[in-house]
Length: 264
Image (cartoon, rainbow, N blue to C red):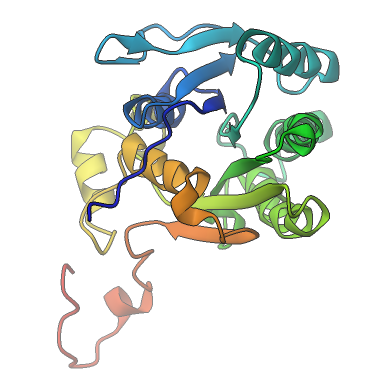
């Protein structure tokens, strides 16, 4: 018997779902048959569609309670339900912690921690009233679980997201399942801002045990699995999607005569 993710008939909201990782997530949910509503402050430059089916874009500032309430009310008014939320919106520019302002740090935490909490809280109100409940997936980051120099506030916010998931999985059960996807490095149209030119991208990719960065669709497939009936007993989990992680620095520094680690 074939096992596949089939989300036909479900309604999914992807925050920040119009570009980068978010667009990949939206495409995967479309491929799985879901109706996908993607929100962002502005539409993406390119359309997100699969086999002629596209996203339903709605503008929203996920940091603003009134805007989020209007968004979720609009989704329910149009489609009658909300089955899954993928909290993807977030990010941070490079800034050393000692040099960044208090206002900068506050905005990073607001976008990456408080905003997904806000969206989840309002979505939960809808899902608790639905017979079949719902699923909320947080897009987190390895930055929350290892040193994150240059994006310290972002890393701290993502650690907070994973803590939220474990708590809300208890508070909102059994109607709502909460899970997070802890992402490693993902190659998107903005990768050059973090990793440099093609040579830099290739060099960074070689540091990953699987030999490449994730594609946005890799993250999307993980989120779709967690949202699907295949994961009906998974809640409160933090699933690592990082290609095997990062090889320890001591392996490159050591002068001991040991067998080479594959891929190094």
